[in-house]
Image 1 (cartoon, helix red, strand yellow):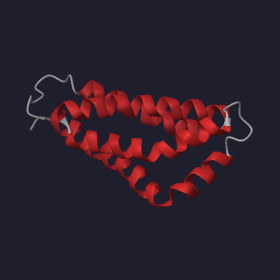
Image 2 (cartoon, rainbow, N blue to C red):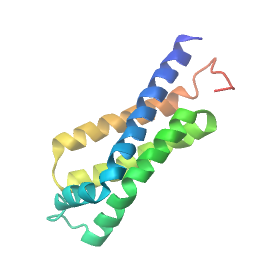
Image 3 (cartoon, rainbow, N blue to C red):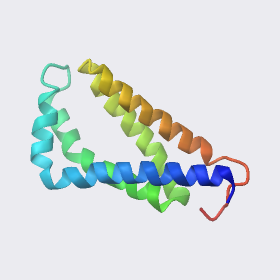
Image 4 (tube, helix red, strand yellow):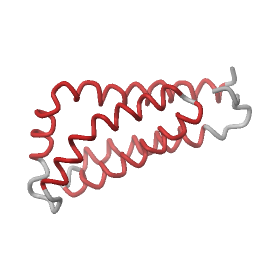
Length: 129
């Protein structure tokens, strides 16, 4: 395995587990997660109904993205893309709250998804991954 392939495997496993577990740990306590997180958006321009609907679906989206990434291949490609889009949506909400440290963390995820997608075009990449 080349260094590029190993690097791609590392980011795939790391991002995949991270997204999968974000979803898995939130689903059993979904109502509490929505109540706690939704309260932080009370003073933003986002309608409470929209915020609540998004938060109820978020853990399932995170779980699906994690599975796509861990499966890899073309599924991984779509997982990275969806992960980047999801992080952009989260970044929008986080900046509305003026939570700049949270926004910084989410921007790190955006960069990680970008790098993971860029790595898929690396020369010498196996077509069987």
